[in-house]
Amino acid sequence: MKLPPFEYACPTSVAEAVALIAAHDGEAKPLAGGQSLVPMLAFRVAAPTLIVDLRKLGELKDIRIAADGVTLGAMVRWRDILDDKGLRAAHPLLVEAVGHVAHYQIRNRGTVGGSLAHADPAAELPGIAVTCEAEIAATGKAGARTIKAADFFTGALTTALEPDEIITAIRLPPWPAGRRHGFVEFARRRGDFALAGAALFYDADAGGAARNAHVGVIGVADRPLRLAAVEAALNGNVIDEATIAKAGAAASAAVDPPDDIHASGAYRRALVGTLVERALTSAAGR
Ligand SMILES: Cc1cc2nc3c(=O)[nH]c(=O)nc-3n(C[C@H](O)[C@H](O)[C@H](O)COP(=O)(O)OP(=O)(O)OC[C@H]3O[C@@H](n4cnc5c(N)ncnc54)[C@H](O)[C@@H]3O)c2cc1C
Image 1 (cartoon, helix red, strand yellow):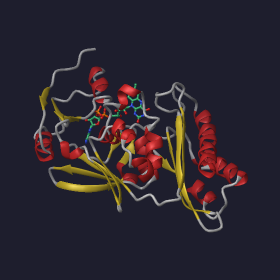
Image 2 (tube, protein in one colour; image 1 turned 45 degrees about the vertical axis):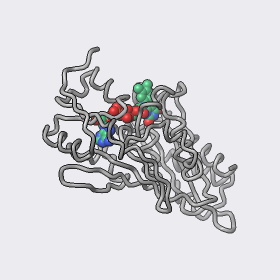
Image 3 (cartoon, rainbow, N blue to C red; image 1 turned 90 degrees about the vertical axis):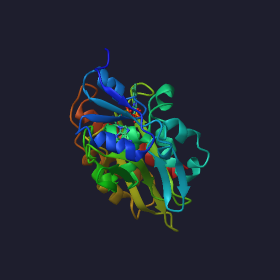
């Protein structure tokens, strides 16, 4: 289908982009990689009067690795993350998860900010953001603010962003040496959105027991979830077969996915338990 008609602007600063969007009273949309927005336009799910192309905002393309964590500008693409030599050590969970995003062509265009704003419940980066307690930076006509990932995703394809705000960056807290992690998802075809996925990490104390466990899942609710019951099953315990089995059972018990055209809720509930077990097995074996 052809796209609906719209005006087009290509600003060269965040301030200019925000001013353009704010002047259109909720009728303007930012364009990043276009991998979700263009299909939405084609299917008339979105029909903005103005498209504000963010591609000239060089200030949103930086990857910064520092003592306070990893900061990814909103216009950083999946390909940039996978190609960055420092990120694999600075945030191995992020890089592993992004390796599962879509297909080669889509990874060359899709961006961090586009994925966070689109807020697909099965998308990898929102899952990593919630699991890792990331902060999302946004700028609108009222100025800049930071939103905790736990408060950012408010439902399927819905976020806490105001209509005049654009995402400028995401910051992931520092990743200490020796941290264990796992990311596992299941999709029917490689590159498709996952039916479900599990992202997790923990630190190990001197006796080998897990502490500071963080466990997140995607594809089983209207937004990415952190599973406190699974984290409780891990903290203080050595990650052996018995603990892994308990964590898997706790994960299945903690979610209540709806039936949809791709899978029944019961299937996804069982799947998420298996994925948490596999992610833990991978983490413990590293
Ligand atoms: C076949 C296919 C398979 C895919 N599989 C996966 C997958 O497995 N996992 C996955 O995570 N994704 C997948 N995607 C989505 C892909 O990763 C998209 O690139 C991503 O969701 C959107 O990023 P984008 O840069 O293309 O954003 P766009 O399509 O340009 O924008 C998406 C939305 O975000 C808004 N937006 C963009 N940038 C900003 C910003 N900085 N601030 C505020 N709002 C903004 C736009 O207005 C729009 O509403 C798939 C896409 C396709 C077509």
